[in-house]
Length: 355
Image (cartoon, rainbow, N blue to C red):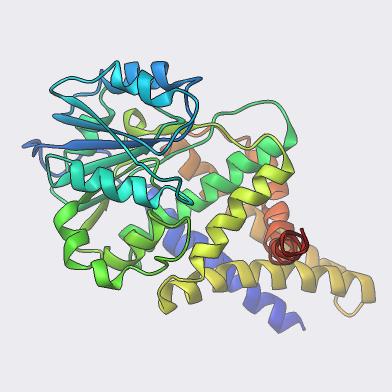
């Protein structure tokens, strides 16, 4: 049992030391300053409450073409968007109420004037007016950005911020090490021609979600993808305010991750699986007395030390505020989250079928 515990610990530590830690030394400097023409595509769905403020921020971005897509809104969003229409800002609308934003997003891509397209969501706030310009500095066909959550009061927000951060650490570090597997539609740039060449390999067309991560999973490689972590390119979004909304959000993500390529599912599954197995083994060994308490606590302290040092260093690199003293606690919460989410999703699906 001791050897198994050490083996699980070794896998976990290896992820942090050899994959995630590569983000610490990544430069914010992009490859080129010869920027190509860029289109910005943003989809809106019943965003009348904040559409005015969002559009005002978007029009300050240094971008050649802005496409505002109204996704069959029923609250007056379309008229607000149309008030911003100009030669540079063009407004289009979807004429049917589709599940998810895939249809609106696809139409936005087809309406864009230029092949290089930057994406974000209507409920997101770029860190600066330089966001679009800096994201377009690289020559890569795909550029993955970072989208942290605003810090608010409450435990749900605290865990949501951390879980979003860890997810970003994974997809950003994978992109520069073992290969990209996903991106977030709140902050990413894709060359439309790349999507056209690989459209038949994009999975999950029947799903309401996944227009961002499944597209990246299908078309991104280490050769055509780069990351941009300049703090001025961060795009902020609000976190969930309740456990119900958090579960709904994460359920959508998990439903798309099952359609990832096999190698990505294995790598992601190995990380979450060893996180679950390690803590379960520690708890079982403590409860049954089958392992020395000294050995158990020594491995826990080693794990927490490595996780805290690496995560805190990455957080500083990504300009994300984290209290290093809370990182071990959140690491344990990730174990509970990874363990319970599949059961919660299963129960939720059964409840939906019953209703």
